[in-house]
Length: 218
Image (cartoon, rainbow, N blue to C red; front, top):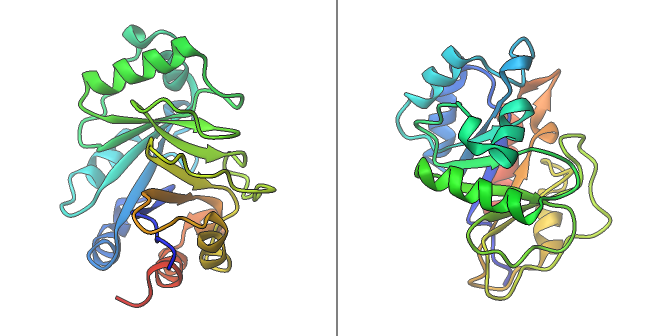
């Protein structure tokens, strides 16, 4: 029997009006909700402003990850002492600083930044998972475009904690679990963004359908 993911990360929470339904779904399934942060793009639905983020983070019973993009992500990776972003209330941090992987110095900067704020940090991997255990690694060659990869990389036998993203949604989530092929006891997560949106907005019916496909009814 294959191991299901430790949790599902639904990225792109866009409105505090969703809070009651986020809480209801989180009470039934293991979920991490991802909030995309880039204040230069605060006029876009995908990037809630500081007030909406604060309202979401104040809601009980929800686990959140900050998916930081734009200038603040670049600062965290290249000049962490210059990064000013307040991440109070988040449990994990994903630094989306580029599309071609991270240098050794950027890895060190991201580890240090996250630890200084009590956060576990994620970086994206575009090939095989790195062996660096101080970070969580998300395999992602889609970068929010909904394009599935040609193949999923193997989970490292001794860690670190790794995740899978790219073209996942209600129609194929169960098939992706089969393709990942994790053995009993192996820990990982799956992440999705574009596959759980309708007309640009987060669609919680699609999130629920993914949960049911992966975990069964609850």
